[in-house]
Amino acid sequence: MSGLLSPLAGVYTYSLQPIAPFTWFGWGISTLDVVATVRLCVVLRQLRESMFKDHVSTKGKSNVEQTSFVRSAVTTLLVVYGGEAVAAPFLNVPPSFMISGVVPALYTIIQAIVDYLPSVPAPSAETELPLSIVDGFTRAYLLCNLIPPVVTANPSTLISSSPWSLLVSSLLIANGGFFMTNLFSLLSPTSLSVQTPPELLPYGWTTTDLWCAPVITGLYALLTHAQPFWADLHAVLSGVLGSTSVGEIVKPLDPESARAVCAFILSILFVGRTTKNFGLWKKQFPQSRTGTIAAVTGLDFTDFLVHRTQGKDSIDKAIWEDVSCFNIDNLVDFLDISFTIRYDMAMRCFELVPNAHEELFGDHRAIPGRFVSLRLEQNKGLGH
Image (cartoon, rainbow, N blue to C red; front, side, top):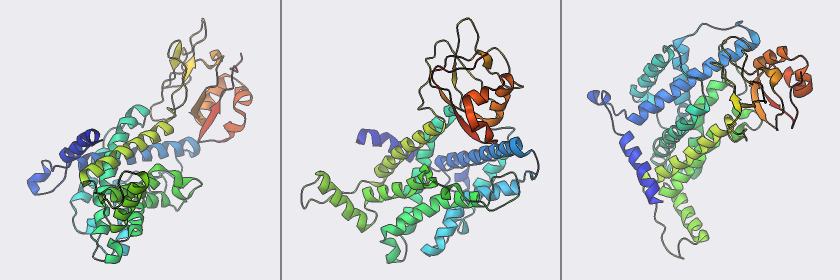
């Protein structure tokens, strides 16, 4: 285990070193800080563009507000500091953005740079899988280094020794910003409005980002004995699992190794989230005698393999501008393929093959502007 943790701890040691030009001014901004800032700012722009396209595809450009950098910057700062601003009064500590303006200025400047780029790549499995590992490292730094000291070093002994305060603080600080951003529709292209955040919708609590915060902070506290409760719990668990004898003192793990464990677990969780979101666990056709539908720039839907029938090319016709797609009336003999496709793309396909939606897709076509899951039954294709 130590052979795996040592490289991870080494990556943290290197990435947390302050870098130029920030060191010229005495600012302790590290490589990890810059990477986390750029990653968040790019994700927020991707979300805004995705919501804009969804709105235009269903409702046109009605009620669309002019793009505002101030709104983008406020959204970014709310995501970063919203949870801290909520938790700070309950912990009786000043929020970090009231002590120093260096990090808020960094987020604002990076968001300005990202917003004025000609374009950013749309999320895809090829980019999100490796970035899931980066997310694991940056999130572990937040949950292990930034949040626990706010509680464990609190002047109030009631707070500093309370494991419940630690877990609740982690939940609020890590998720409060996005919760309020969704609550007030700050990423929407329309004017601000109050809506139900995804976390409060059915099964919203199952979101990985939501529950991983208290779980990982609790794990870090358990491994490092951040509070007396966690030291006692570690001793009990070690005795139950038989890793220590009766009366033997359980030693805590050093903070760097514990953080590496948390980063490793978070990376696995986020890779699993990406795999689920892009449908990478689904069984695909063998690569031979297949073709791949080309993705539409800016549209987020899962590419899928289509069977190439004997004597016919599956990909030989453009359905509409900027899209290379298969000739749908040649698509036959599917064997239980599941895929996801946007409603507007499905409508274009239906124009080529009248009544195809009634035969294969049933009432799914009645859900405009949303992703719909379409399953082709075994040995059932599109007839001529």
